[in-house]
Image (tube, rainbow, N blue to C red):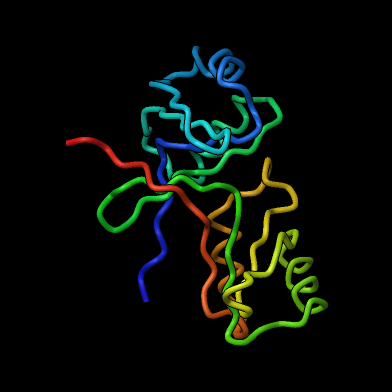
Length: 163
């Protein structure tokens, strides 16, 4: 099985905020570098990674934004490539769950069931109930702990750099 991507301390995805408003909020932030528009009305925010853990960087930025909108750390694969979370979490169970058990799993993990995968009945899509104040990597880690779960991961879009 492939290792889970690790969170970045310098790149974040913002969902639910206009680029101009985000620019206003972060332009005076120490270490601010740039904002890039992504598909699905997502924004990629780049700040200079301080000597903080990714979790602490997320907390610092969350406090600085003081605005509605969801903030997810960009995930880095084994090659250091950026994977931009969309806010959706995929969970594949060892076997298909009845709807009632999916709802119970969602409630236990503070998730909202989006849909069951029509091609893979043992897989379902979820979103966090409170993505504005919940750290995505911790949700993924916790969702991977039940013995009924084969694997849980953040749905992402790759963000490649030209070399």
